Image (cartoon, rainbow, N blue to C red):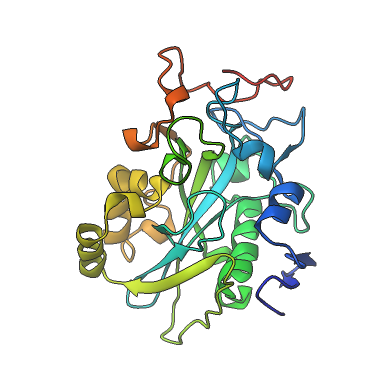
Length: 297
């Protein structure tokens, strides 16, 4: 295994996948093929959507880009401290903000397969979502150098899904910002079982800083660090169940107490609205693809 933009070899019980060979942010924008979904997380297979295509926002028919699937990992150590990360300044969308442990996308054409069908019983009933867990382990290694051996697949707990959007107005202005996020975001929790420290070797192109925090330390950070310096998705999660999930970490969260297949929609705080986001006709379907690949505006 090697880090810092070179090849990442991700081992699983079934196969090995190489990801990140000499790729910077621009290269991943062009090469990563995301999973387009509808507002209820149904798969849209009528067209391929690159990371770049999905994240491009504009006043000309793409006010929310294209809705796609994502995940947000929350990793806790054996003392129930949460691992926070600060996104690298080289990130194209929302650079330099604090957020949860790892935020990224499951991809098409990966091995192991990262595409989940929510209608299958193993997902709709048992919350398995093996594909997004494969993606999470791949990106924990790519972004933080966390070897998958420290994050067993079967110990990752799916919690719920959030559908949100946000234009990156803080970095590109409100007039016509070219980038944003529009995702059905799978929330994944993981807690390490022993006191051995997980080795972390962050990629400088992905993570600028990181720290483990207790609840009290995190609340202090929230008071001291301006709201604009936190990711909009993370801010949205905090008001929609997060504190309860953390409180119950050893009392059911990791065994499915709070797991559900709801797709909870929220609009971002107003500071993430571009000039083209105030159209009163916009709704939850704006920026989603129909089954035949037509983008709804």
